[in-house]
Length: 374
Image 1 (cartoon, helix red, strand yellow):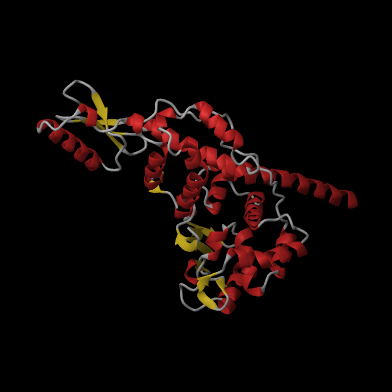
Image 2 (cartoon, helix red, strand yellow; image 1 turned 90 degrees about the vertical axis):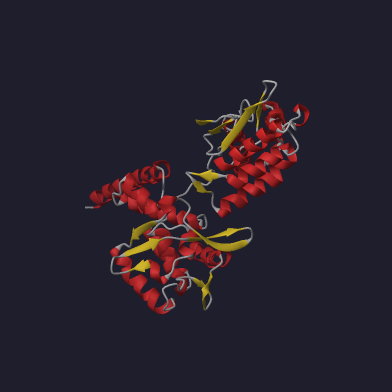
């Protein structure tokens, strides 16, 4: 934290990247602004107004700026969401909509009118005990969001401690264990999709692309001379509408090399199923090359294709998992996996290396069978 020295009052920058201002009254009491400020200039303006009130004898201790004890959760959550950033960048529109929904449905009804300073660990435990008990993933998201909001309030010095202290409540065990698709299964699934969507399976598996990245892929993003797909955007649903956004993380902006045996598939798809303009979608909705294919429409065909491969358990995102395991099995390092998948931290990529190690045992067993048959 950094502090600014002034002739009247003081301003300091908090870990949340917002600014806090306070001043000393003629009676010697310290008064803090009720909330924090997104820009230093706003904090300075607040102090100027308070100094003017004192100079003009308009200062009234009974009418002084409300202190932190009077900030409600509803007010603070709204301010928090409006200014939320991660890594110095505003959160994604889809993430913002997700948070707004949780705040409206789960947090405001329970804590909205409560003062921040009045929320106790007992209050949080009571809320958690009866909230979304049949939806463990959403329950973990709701608790984690509450904890994050109140953690920022603590950084802003609006509360003395974070009352969210339930160990493990913000995490959830993965109940869907992914069995990676084999190359033969991937080929069967692709072959059973409509011809214009077969390459989408290739992008999801061999190139380990996310669904939103695949559906936003355009002719100008495919460089067959360099043998790469340049991922710069994704289509997301936020507020009930589809819109273009940057990939999920900064690392998601990447170039992914096309396995050489698949280059001709890309060439054929561009020639037969993609408009001539650079901005023509590779997988549009019907004949209109400007409209995105809806995920629901894609899944309608995908369910039939995965059933033909005997893999009713395989979600679309599991194709990306399968492609990551293929890359790891081929010898990709952790850094190479992170770059190919667009991961900003190594933890996620490590899962695929571990999965590849498991597949290596299967390969070793198959090798022994070959030796036994010789």
